[in-house]
Image (cartoon, rainbow, N blue to C red; front, side, top):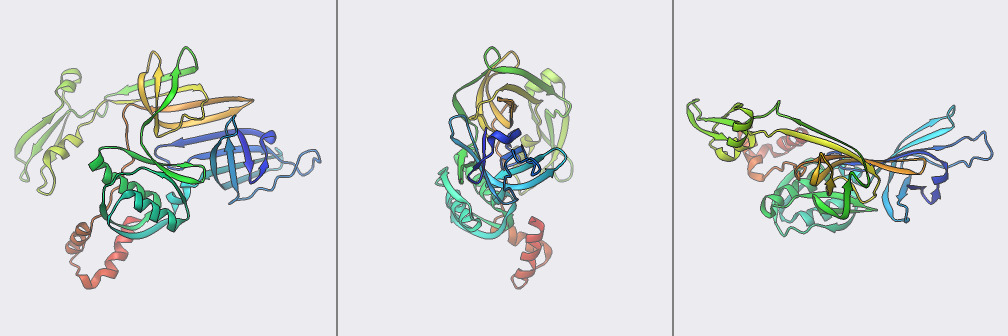
Amino acid sequence: MKIKIGQKDITHLLTSCTWSGSRLNVARKLEYSFVQDDRDANIPVIDVDNGYTCYGYDDADNLVFEGNIYGIERDRAKSSVSVTAFDHLYVLAKSKTTRKFDNITPEDITRQVCAELGVLVGDIAETGTAISFIANAKTGYQIIQGAYTEAAKVTEKKYHPVMNGAKLDVIEKGTLIEGYTADSAVNMEDSVYKESIENLIDQILVVDEEGNRVDYVRNDEHIKKYSMFQDVYKQDPNKDTQTEAEAMLKKPERSGHITALGDYRVKSSYSITVKDSLFKGQFWVKADTHTFTDGKHEMKLELEFENLMNEEKTEKEEEKRERRKRRGGSDTERGELDEQDAGDSA
C-alpha cells in the first residue's frame, strides 16, 4: 500500500502497514510505522501530528483510504513513528446530536446528519420509505443505521455505511464482489472452520401471564439431529408471541476465517465466493485485516454464514409518551424528562 501524510509520500519509509475493518467497528482503520530519526541526516523528517489527514492507495494508485490521524507513538530508540488513523466514519461514530425526524426517508436523514456533523455524502441507498423517530443524544452512526433499520423492515434489504474516499456511501449490505473468488488451489493459504451447539435452543415453551402452558415453537430438524434444548417465553400482550418466541431459537454457532493473497476489493460488509474443502459458496466478510510486509499483501478474513445487518433501535414519539406516563410525568415536565431520556440514550 502506498501511504501519504497530506501530500507527502512516505511509502519508502514504511516498516509496517495494516489496513482493517469490521462490520461491528464501523470505521476502517489504517495503522503504519515508518522510520524517523532526526539524528540521521539521510532520513527525511516527516511532519506528522494528530488530526492530519492521511491517504492509502492501491497498486494502481486508486484511493482506498482517506482519514485522519488519531494516535501517534514516537520511539526514539527504535527510530520509529507509529500512526493510527481512522476513516471519516469515525466522526459519525463519535459525534452525537439530538433530533426529531417526522415522516422522512433514511436517505434524507443521512444527508441532514452528515451536513450537521461535517461529513460529505456520496452514493446513498434509496429506500423510498418514510419513517419517524426521536434521536436523543445519539451518534450520527446510530441515527443513520437506526433509520435504515426501520426501512429494512419494509424493503427487506440490509444496509451498511462505508466511506468512499472523503464521502459516505450507504450500500446494500452483503453485496457480492464480482470477479473475485477465494480459491484454495489458487490464492488461499489457510482456512479454519468452527461449529458449536453449546448454546443451541431448538424448542420454546410458550406460557401465559400466569405461567400456564399455551404452545410450543420448535425447530424439528434440529431436535431430531441434536436433541431437544428448551427455553420459556412468557406472553406479552404488547408483543407478537410467534415472532418473539421464534427469535429465542438459537442455531448452531458457526464461524471461520481464511487467509489469502491480498485483494483491495475484499472488505467487511461485502460478500465473496469461496472454493475450499471447508467453505464452498457465498460467504459474508465480517472482518478483514490486510497486512503489507516486504512487498507482500496478505489478508485474513473472518467469515459469516448469513448476511447480518447492524441494527440500531429507534424511539417513537408514542414510546416516549409511554415512558413519561410510566414515570408519572406530564407535558409540563418535558424538559426534565428529555434530559433523562438523553442520559439514558448516552
